[in-house]
Length: 514
Ligand code: GLC
Ligand code: CA
Image (cartoon, rainbow, N blue to C red):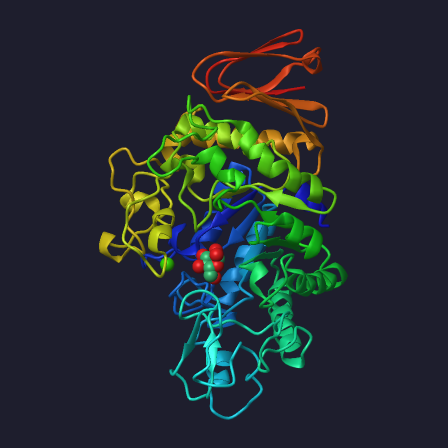
């Protein structure tokens, strides 16, 4: 387990939308490198970049044409190495995005696998042995290629599934997970990982990590075995490299697959939604962080605690503000509500992730789809730096921008919020700094619920010797507990008063006590 993860606070960057270094209207690696000082000032000491590889961009770059080539629109390999170098000088680690489950249908491996005659890449993707036979229960395409078979899709139609084999094999053409062709795919992916680790990257966020072995069992044990094998390679050759999975099942991903971290996504029924956007169609929003919503923290705890208890000795759950696939928190929360969410995120166990722009409360924009984004596009608009042209994102003409910038006169910007000590940006900075200051707030320090009454009464938890307490409601609340005796208020958003064993928290307030 890399030690640095204990104190890591990640910043996720969607590369075309962060900063344009050469004025062509699209964000790039030079722009990200120039923006690293901002990331450092925010207090983040790790980055996750969405795919920066050569791609036709039918799915925002998750459709890779060449794993070892930087997309020309973002720059060159030398630009990426410069980004790693500057990041490392600033004490920032960099994770790239590994997309192991599929490639673009323009990838050379896939093109070879489509030929009529068998070749080295025939087994690299999932193909049936007959063009008139489909793949029950899975999306597939037939009739488009010379090869007499149908091929399986992993996501969009442009993303054929790489072949890691099948656990439950019902057809003769299904490879076993330990067949030579499935093992060759696995080795090819390890080779990609080595390639970038050798050039200075610090690990990977792994896309659809649970999707590799098909017809896997309910514990995804065959897919987990592939990742344990990858983890063995890392432990041996790159012990400082970190892996975070897009799996959203930490028991399977961490305990089974050996991932260091697993994302706590916004899947239906997951605890994230109960915090930020807890509503049923047509009903009221009962999110815990919505002021006076009547939300109940126990709905989050019921989901989170068993996952935390079962995985805490082996790895970390990664909670986030949102990501490039989900609506931004500003969709449902006000700036004051987001301030409390940041305080919570930075004082919870595991490794937190901030999505670019959430630290200033960027909107979930109403924009047309771009590059396979569909409703996700609204969370991918350009970073809002200041009130210069295109909000500081790019010097290009507005019509050349990757996506439009927020044209509202009151569009939030980092520069404005810099000036205001109470802004969301400065509040996020404060709580990130607080996390770095106290080892008891970091990834592996113990967590225990101190008080979680229903409604929006104070929710309080212990982190090592510290206590965190929050009141998301619009009225003052009080908590009496002998654990509070002798403590002081170490940091606060809103208003907190502590006398002996009684804590009084003002409306929408969060306090750290120790
Ligand atoms: C993941 C990515 C998403 C992408 C999909 C297919 O969910 O986060 O953006 O479209 O996988 O690769
Ligand atoms: Ca550019």
